[in-house]
Image (cartoon, rainbow, N blue to C red; front, side):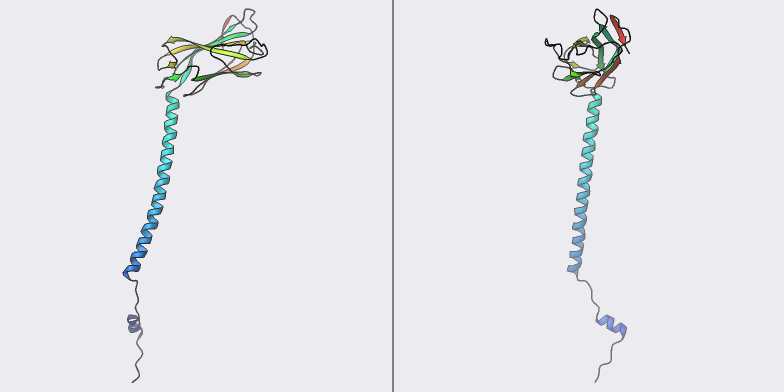
Length: 205
């Protein structure tokens, strides 16, 4: 007896196939593992970026919390003939927002003199040689409020730059710059121009 062909609905029921539980578990585990790897990568990148940002912020705070600035006028003293500037003096103090001390010892700061003819680091203590062609300068400090090599908040000191061994010397109507560069904290820049007529003692603008 010939079998009667199955109808379409009966054929679908007879040939129904599905995914077994093991295959489902493998696919699920694969999705979880991939998602975990991507999540770990994203979290690691975020933590690294946060750490770098933290270091940048802390570095900026450290710079701004240990800052000195010029307080008052910049004074120039000329030689006896009133032809050149012998010394430049200005007062340094801790900035208003400073909370850390600034090291102004001989190993904690570099003082540089610059003009159109020379750029040299000044010495402390003064140790000029006898060669007139060698450009040299020196710096020294005199405490007004406080003492020692560290400028704590509220302290003030006079810094004197001796220019008697420059080559050439600092004449009238000449722009010059003095940079005070502590190991920690902002650089103090003193930029002035000597007046057209030199006096024994004068305020430099």
